[in-house]
Length: 347
Ligand SMILES: C[S@@+](CC[C@H](N)C(=O)[O-])C[C@H]1O[C@@H](n2cnc3c(N)ncnc32)[C@H](O)[C@@H]1O
Image (cartoon, rainbow, N blue to C red):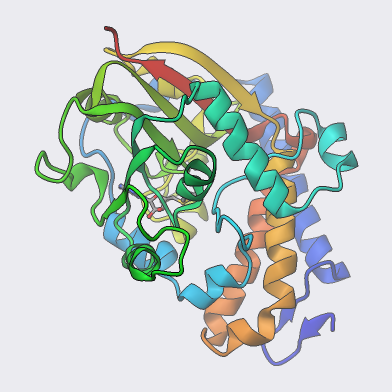
């Protein structure tokens, strides 16, 4: 099947879907190249990533995106971790192209890399902001049974999924030292989470929902113990891309209300009290490959997903996979990829 005619949605891998992706990728390649040749700065754009609310439109973001029907997420995410962030296939575009590992293995690779970069020992108390469906927790408890995690997410769907897992005596999460707080980071208070009590604070895929980076670092600083570490994994661009920094100026705002793509250097620039230990840029072909696998699985489960979602939402998500893939393609992932950042609170 190359298309669901009644819905006018091209299949994964069809000529029409590939053409759409290629057109957007070509347009973006020209934009990115122009920005590399004539760079702009975030300061020049007058964006103030160090003032105002920590995040904006969080309720919209949940409604539009994260609180979509569970059947949608179950229809494309990897079955083991249910991770909703880039999987790690390799360091270079060639390595990514030449690997034949599964999405599940590539997600495991990502979490292993994150733990190595943080230097997880196995008995830490971790605050994981933006915990999704517990993907990182799955990896942590499988590999470090003595770890304690408090996960935070404003999503009703994610929280009820996780609480059901924890209440199910047959589920892996049952009896683990794992608590979920259903809140956004801004409204988290000292009763929910004790300040100064965490060895590690992590965020995997959260920072594109954050507007005030200085406030993010201040919050993280507050929750860490002296000497504690903070680790962030986020989508990032090499050139500053002005339209991706204002959610009202691009399709990013349609899919991620209040969202933005921070340039690679931006997050560390706003860390006043935390010391940057290291940062890494991960080639965007890793995300392209992850999205392509998600899109493929979405398409192969389309009949089941259709039972739960109206046609306009199926079209919305089909376009989403195609558009997102196109962002990572130019210059084989060198412009647009993921950033890893490790910070430490002084002793
Ligand atoms: C891209 S998902 C990543 C989920 C998970 N970390 C993973 O890798 O599978 C982003 C997560 O951030 C959460 N999130 C978005 N805005 C947030 C906010 N303001 N405060 C806390 N969590 C937020 C979403 O609900 C979701 O759980």
